[in-house]
Image 1 (cartoon, rainbow, N blue to C red):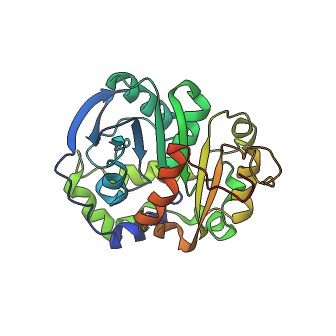
Image 2: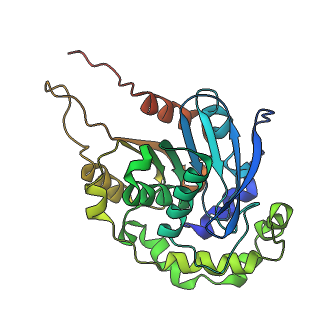
Length: 287
């Protein structure tokens, strides 16, 4: 997704995921496609959703780190990695519906969700459309409205075309895992179309009743102002130390971090995510 073009830079430099012999790959029929997923770790269920043009390996070391304390289900979206494509557009409601259908197929009634970039927006849409399925949401590098993207990115969207992506190193790498090695151009067309999909979810975000951890880089694709606006919609941004409990939702800003650098800092990501999922809050002087 968003950040389609930018994410390709990440894929060109990201290192391999930590070796983890406990990961088990599997496939399941979901909404007319064969969806690939991997399961690792033990504990409460946690679903991990990657960004556009990515796959499970390109999410890097954060997956095995989270698997130390959670039963992690890492999914590969429509047309990505080893999951097949089908004659259907890639939209956020469709992606969210795929995750919901996967949960039904895998017997997961409710789970925490961690998504990055396109996966974060899909996770946000999952929480909006299927609130009964999401316990807590971690959304890294996300927006709830197209106007929340940086002006430079909004200006770039109309210039996107398939040819520029075919020249990326990722175009060749796609063939290594793809269910259809020749399916990359069709995937690019769908992901470019995704950038043009209407996106204005403010009222739906405000109505969410689950805890949400928003993670952003200070030089991310969404503006800091938009990210703070989202945090306020979720009840955040109030003053603590006034005798009232803090809001359940949280905001974390990663310093000196662009969009593609977010998942390249797994230790920092984990330091934000794990306390949130465990419900741990730093203690102040008055507690």
